[in-house]
Image (cartoon, rainbow, N blue to C red; front, side, top):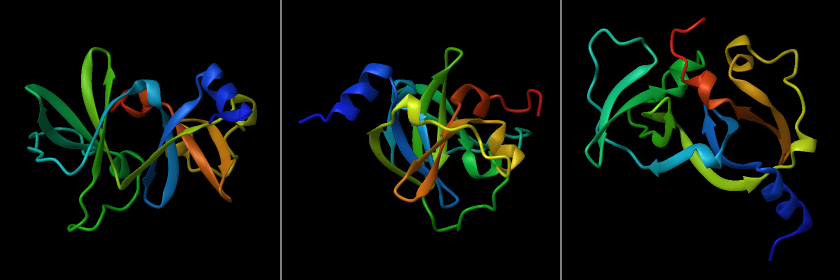
Length: 154
């Protein structure tokens, strides 16, 4: 059964997949997500920017894996931790965004979105479309296009 706010969020296109990076709840538009995968074998790419973890094979396609912790200037995850992959398409290429955890798909009303707080770290502010208050925390809405603009204008 859908509530009125759920239906409104669906109508406004604000369904997001929640994920966690360094303890921070985030969200990406569900319409941009192609796949969600558990731990994958990733091959390092020599001379790649530091935020590029490497490449993985997804059903015969090469996918560039971007470590969201490194991209956002956070400490590396524990060596035993296995990141989750959120696969998105950008500019005709597939990318895997490596997150600490993936949550659920949730509806968010566009009207409830707030601008980035002035105290938000510049690395996060650069890739954020705004924030939502959810379960007593700020959920940062990530802009996938800006997040994947590795080395471009940073």
